[in-house]
Image (cartoon, rainbow, N blue to C red; front, side, top):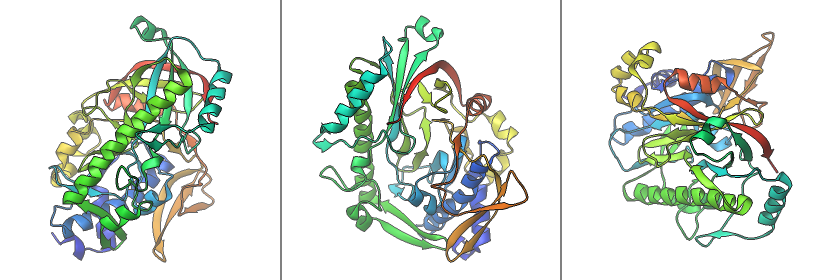
Length: 404
């Protein structure tokens, strides 16, 4: 086999596509994810070979496979909904282009249904005063992107099992730590001058890829663990200020590093966390779910999707059977697009030529940040169960949504 660096762009993308395993829906957003991720994986493959490693970075998607609305992450060649793996042994090597941010969701139990006007008053009080965790001023991000506060009523089965009758979800990350602080080097290479100067770069046919290795990777990973703890504590602090008395049902991360060589992009790992119940929040008008994950992917599913031969050919089969990941939401759906027909590169920019529902025309996309979208619904839950990734434990019915 030729060296990666000797291949044409088309050959590089072909190999990358063979390292992408899709468990997502057959819709326009999932198609965009697949096509864009071919560029991200190609860049990592190219860098791996330059670093003397086997070029076999792999992405396995979850049933909410979709685009990412972060412009820099998208331009770097990533999508959302799944797990990225670039090594099977604990190499001190971290690719930082995907911008891990420790985002997660806290599910808290309540004995009584709060009055929403009281919660709004408490939010206003929170926003008008300064709060700190470990001497870092909190930046409340309830308004940003798809972050939110939802209040639910639990189904009767949960009450029989001893859970409280009501619950809430707080969705948030740690924007306070994206640039350098007294606590560390920062999470985002495009926000932190220190991190940008520390990172190394490999120029590839599809643009640069940034990485850290050895002691620099250790420093970054330790800072990420701090950020993950900070984000979890921040969600708990918000819950305390908004709801006062509550019980923690779940507080997992869904966007960030699992270890030096694995990264969650909008998904939840089930075997390396204290949490036993994992939230999946769909649209605001639909129930949310607390699910229990299952060790995955089952060999029957691998066979059903025709993954086995390809995975074994590239010696990445174990990454499939040790996937162990659940989706965290419904994911963006782009209702007017059915699939990507092709991608054209013009002046070093990727242009996605997409088929529309109305086939008399095409849509050409380069930046997905402002593309029209909705959130997927129950189909994501059904597919998660059908694939043997997890089971519903409790349904939570929305009472009101706070997006203020």
